[in-house]
Amino acid sequence: MKIDRRGFIGCMAAASAGCAARRGTDGGSRCDTFVFLSDLHIEGAAPTYAYSKKRLEKTVDEILSMSPLPRGVVCFGDISCTYGLDADYIEAKRILSRLENAGVALHFTLGNHDRRSFFFDKWPRCAENSPVPGRCVSVVDLGSADLVLLDALKGADERALTDMGPVEGGLDDRQLAWFGDFVANAARPFFVGTHQFSDLYVKGLSPVERAAKSRHFSGWIYGHDHKWQPSFRACGWKDGVIKPILCLPSSGLWGDIGYVVFRTSAHGAEAELKMQDFYFTMPRPAAERPSFWDARIGDLKGARAHFPFDRHA
Image (cartoon, rainbow, N blue to C red; front, top):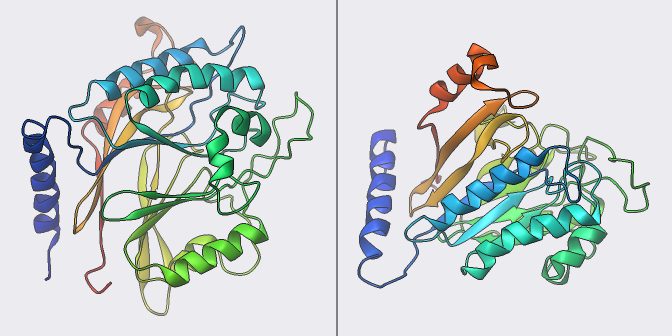
């Protein structure tokens, strides 16, 4: 069945309405709704950027007020503020545990400011369940699609505690081999999620080109740049293949501040921006805020991005 853009968006609106209608009949059924967070940048003791923690706490409050609750929350890396310190993950765990205690599943990938050993110590299941040993890799069931979370963290745990590690991301050969098998065997729509996107360095085909070998590949989602930015990437010039790309806002540290509500249906997915603020590089009193900051918030109010599933898939 062919569905044009208006019809696709209508299907998404109907799916959202259906979710709302179901909540009164089954006392807790959840639609295929997830919340995407990125760039939490949480510090432990004596934080320099205390507003990041306050923003995350506010976001958790908003998520817990959703009715019905989302099926899960996905964190796209940079849970730690700068160096991947143990105290950072202790504090992040304290805040995010409110979601887990309410029955909202947490899913993670890691960013350039993270450190695997301290992170895995707080969320050991992320290591235990990873199909690639030593990496934070997983496949999240979004309902009518999958989200493949890859670990683009290049920094080694052996680096000094004052070393934030390399900013650029990368995927090691073991992940690429596993990812290649996943793409080859994909039987339904899937998205790929990493912390970085443009900075991923691998040999041969780029990761997005590797994903596009499957007709089920429906889009790439990432953080790192601290801004809401729907875009697209050419994956095959000869065949005219392009795929949607979405950069996520930061949950609390400079740039676009907020989170994304991600809903899937039989025909595609919709990402809805929940814009909370904009600042660079630190918040300022209202009287000192540059005009661009509030203009940016107004421009992005109600922003959405759509990911239609290929009808030929």
